[in-house]
Length: 439
Image 1 (cartoon, helix red, strand yellow):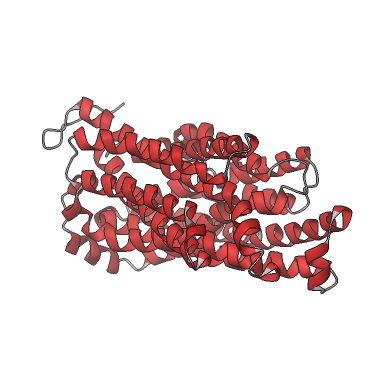
Image 2 (cartoon, rainbow, N blue to C red):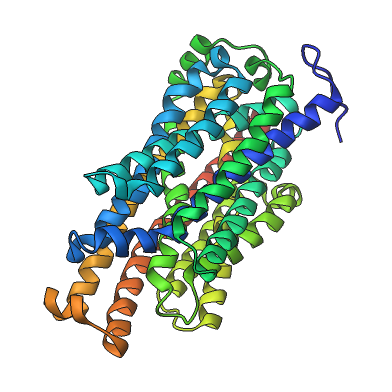
């Protein structure tokens, strides 16, 4: 491990504590995401089906996507000014917004316009999540400047760890026959822990996240002067939607088809991600960043197509394994890649990448819901009355058709990525050979 050089009085002990705060904050955000997936079924049945059963899936996608929209906007707006805010205040604000957002969703039934209240709660949750993501990536870069890929992957391993715990807590609440609104309690406790640690810790300056001190103005200028950054921003939209959209949809789409709660698949996949992200270093050393991304896209494509055909716990687990291994390294590897290629863009490029990823999921989730609704209605013979009254084997047939349509549609996204990353790998190799010849 590289020896730690203190930054503005930050000791080795403070570095470890800072990193733990970042881990816990991302863990909390992950738990919040999986709890949203668990409660999505309850929100649909309790609030959205009575409003409009034919378009309930699309409405649910819009509600879930609202968190990703505010996540994206927060990343975009806060990243350039993070230096003025500081790491500590950003962590404290993140904790407050996460708890407030869950409280709004839990209390939605007390509002005259329930749908609006659900949207508002999700937006507030997304702001908290966005503040976490805005803060942790430059903090990790500041703490471990010589080991960014490895530590960003280790850091982002705690997002799936939160997904696992959140999924199990949500299932525990359901299994105990408790009201789904009790899911706010663990989120509040997790947020309190990392906020309490952040209050006491000393953090490095945000400028330490770049190889040399760079002002916000210089970061923006460096970003605008490198238009190829926006190529990676577009790719981030594809990789993030491949990971997040199916994760939010799996419980809704598969629970009544595969003989188990779909959220268990998310917990299983998240457990795989937690373990595998700790081994990013050797894989990157062997395959390179772009090679790892291309290999991931292949596995994600296979897994999503297979999820569209899953009809039992075994087939669902096998398909989820492929998808899980595929999306495991997307987010941290994309961030590490742009950090290495565009070091002077600092927090701005982190913000752009995260914003693009979240914004794409905001678009994809309602689209996924619309595909799901259209397939359900078609399987019901185009009759809304049949759809509303379907039971037993007829309902299973309808839901199976809808799940197949939605997952196979999303699988087209990583399919495109396979060819794009292959092209990037070839271009990088040609550039390297040309440079070697010139020398």
